[in-house]
Image (cartoon, rainbow, N blue to C red; front, side, top):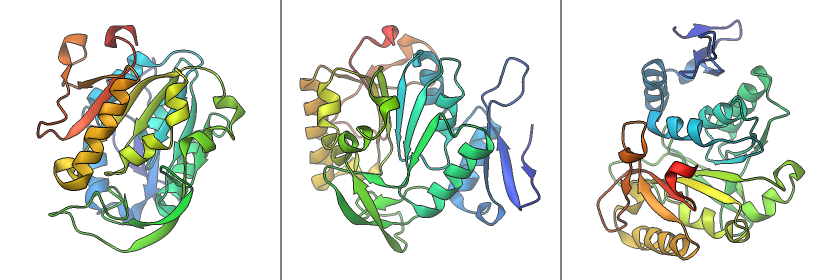
Length: 277
């Protein structure tokens, strides 16, 4: 299956996730003018192959249960949000995307896939306090609050000032998220510690079964690395264990995450045994 072009000049990318009849569970659409962007090329090539961030997507497919709430911080165009909302478990999604262009594309994808009642799109960043802050651009991906995630060799583009909310405050606005188990994904380009600091009450509630967060290049050195270690320590104190995803599908494919090692990629912090998700 390949990409197609609609009458509005948008490219439609079929998801690597399929229904029982072999048709795509959803389609990700984006303006044709963004097709040459490096981030877009990575997404398209990956999704037409095994799937974008396939080990993480496989884990979520196994983990979702009926009644779950999926919180997608840094939702981009909706790969993970649309996956959750089209899962057989019937998951409700709150998707945060601060970049205005990406948020508009995300909402278009939610609407064209008929998922407006299942996905709430919040056009804001998440942090440890209510604020406005500069969101520094890179490609269509890797936007970073105050540019902290864009260490060399990544280039910094123009900034846009965006609202910042705390997860605790934001989730209180959604009755659909008031109950149920929470699965949280955070891809915030170095702002992950601030995001989780703003979710302190949610984390203490005992409702969060799993957090998938990106240990990116922002955490290779400096105060960002110290902040990541503190974040991991705080989660450990709440009973979370930290694992690194392998390339396979089984429990044996996970290994312990070492906050002092030079690792970049997704980390799974879970409050239950991985085989109980």
